[in-house]
Image 1 (cartoon, one colour):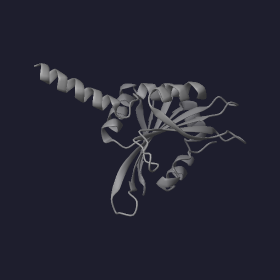
Image 2 (image 1 turned 45 degrees about the vertical axis):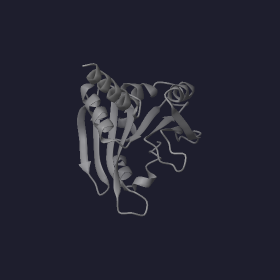
Image 3 (image 1 turned 90 degrees about the horizontal axis):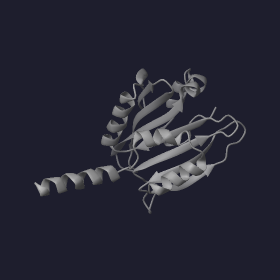
Length: 192
């Protein structure tokens, strides 16, 4: 019996360490300032990897990676925190590569009471939009080739924004136009 409990605790600790943020924690980042975001993510073993200042109506951003390789730009997960000090607009972009984490986040979005308001298949993947009382989740599932081989991996991308931001900047044709771009340009989300 003790061995079963030990194994269960060991497995739980390994899976909870893997990409160590809950969806609730990710969503809460949108309400924080950049200093609080950086301190929170650093305390959770995320690495700061770069930033761009806001200018001329475009959002600024700070990028973080979890379990980033020392040899290339691969990581277990990425977070981009987008912000505008002028408008107070905040967005969180999260990219994960593990199907189990994607399924946990998707189940939590549904638990929040968010409803699927739009979905489509494009040449590059599957796009879905879930919306709750105050928050919109734009989910993008795509594949990306692995270097020079024909192997591919699935990438799960979440953009977390306020409903008013979605209504103003994403609801119309911009959504379709944005998602027709190649996966390697997805690091930069629309900033209007």
